[in-house]
Length: 199
Image (cartoon, rainbow, N blue to C red; front, side):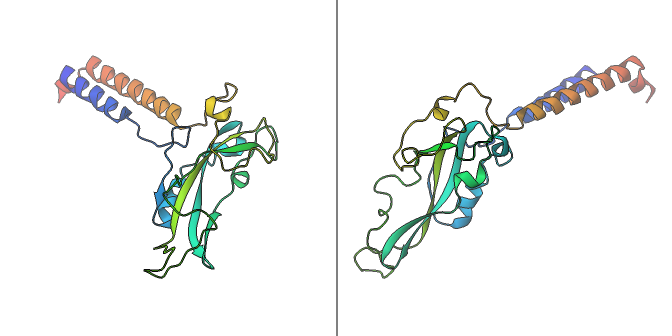
């Protein structure tokens, strides 16, 4: 009986390793060679938590392509379309904290380009990147907070002590605790009534 109980308890604790990538200040931006890969990363934003936001981080896809012989960068989503502040602020401050395209990884917006191999400014194919922004609902958007320079914001330093967006880990431990109590109670009842000896 003790062996069965030990095995069951061990099995309960095996799934405790949670590997969920969350959009936070440690998120690593990068380049993608398909739109879907970038959209999959964009989906990792806490869209539910961002509907009652205070401060945090948000990642958005940027398409880099050649149009009329010029490189263009188009933001596919805008942070202000995804963030709804809990305090009712319609224009929270936000700052690009980590660009998806590092210097030298892609041509600058506005530089000449062509899709013709062998030509000067040859651009092999469209690429996508994901930019990381920090936002804070206590501030307001102005021209200095929407520049494309990399700066650190109060949100990057943890904000004003607000809780991080919900990750679901509390629910996981609540369910795990209920399972342990139920299983422990069941095993105690089985052992107390000697049900295994009757079989």
